[in-house]
Amino acid sequence: MDTQRQLDKLLTMLSLFGLASGFFLLGILILSKGDSEGASIAGGFISVLLGTAFLLSAFSYWRAARYLMPRGRPQLHDEGRLADGSAEGVNT
Picture 1: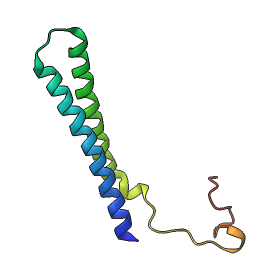
Picture 2 (picture 1 turned 30 degrees about the vertical axis):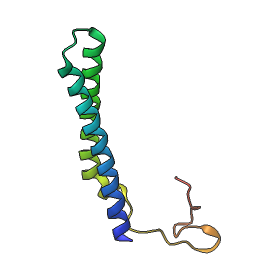
Picture 3 (picture 1 turned 90 degrees about the vertical axis):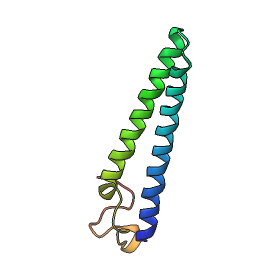
Picture 4 (picture 1 turned 120 degrees about the horizontal axis):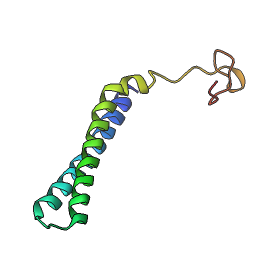
């Protein structure tokens, strides 16, 4: 089960990094084209900012993933109740 969590973490990180690099490169290409139109410059800057935001999200996810993913599945008792008596899937 540990390899499944590691694989989930890795694939999520790679997806976020792929989005970051795609938006960043798209923004750089728009800005390097050199059109002096305001809309293209604004679109290029927005794309670069989105790429940066996805990159920061990827790094923060990588650091926080060990706290987000539980170590194992909680043990269920009779009638779908957890060990502390609460129902499964109910956040209290």
